Length: 254
Image (cartoon, rainbow, N blue to C red):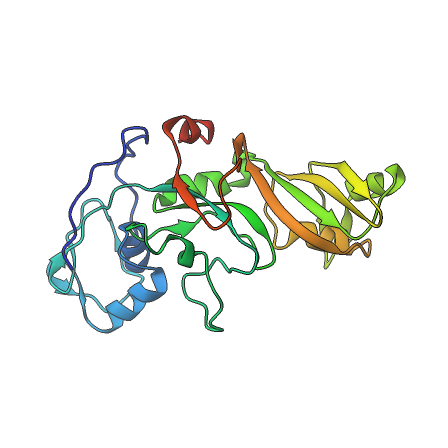
C-alpha cells in the first residue's frame, strides 16, 4: 500500500501541526480508511508506530510527526479534498451499511479520491447538498455550533399552511425533552394539498426538521438541502460530486 505525498491544494489554508489524536482516528485523518477499518487493521497487528506494533487503537499519536506504518509502508498525509455532492434520496451517509443499502460512497467510487467523510449527515430519505472531506479540522469547524453556519432546506409537506400555522412552526415544539426550533420558516409556494417551505437551521440535531413538523402532525414528502452558509447546491446533477473552488472554500471559512 504505497502512498505518495501530494501537496495541499493552494486554495486551502495550511494548518499547523495537529494535536495528538487516537491512532484509529489518525489513520482516518491521513486518508487510509475509516476509524472502524483502522481498528480492525490494528487488531490484526498491521500497524506500527515508531517501529513498534501497536494493539491499542486509542494510543495518542501526532499524525503530522509520528512515524506510522501499515503493512510496513509509511503513511503520510494525503492531499486535502473538499467535495460537494448532490445526494440522491435513498442513500445513507455511512461508509459501509450492515443492511446492504446504497451509500453516498457509491457516487464517488470512480473519482480516485483518498478516504473522505461526510461533513454532518443527511438521512436516507433526504437529499441535496452534502459536503465531504478528509480535512477533519475544517469539518469540525463547520459542525461546531459556535460557527453558526446556517443550513437551508426546501421541504415539501402534505399540507397547505396558513400564516397562523407557520407562526406555530416558528415558535418550535418540545419533542422527547428537546425544544426544536428553526432560524426561519417561510412559505415558498403552495398548491392543492401540498406546499414547499424554506427552512433554515443554525444547529444540527438528529432529524430536526422531520421531528419539528411531525410534532404538528405534518408529513414531510421531500426534504432537500439547498445551501450551507452561502454555498449553494445550484445546478449540480443529482448523484454527482465536484471539488469546491477556492472562492467557495473561502465562503465557508477555509
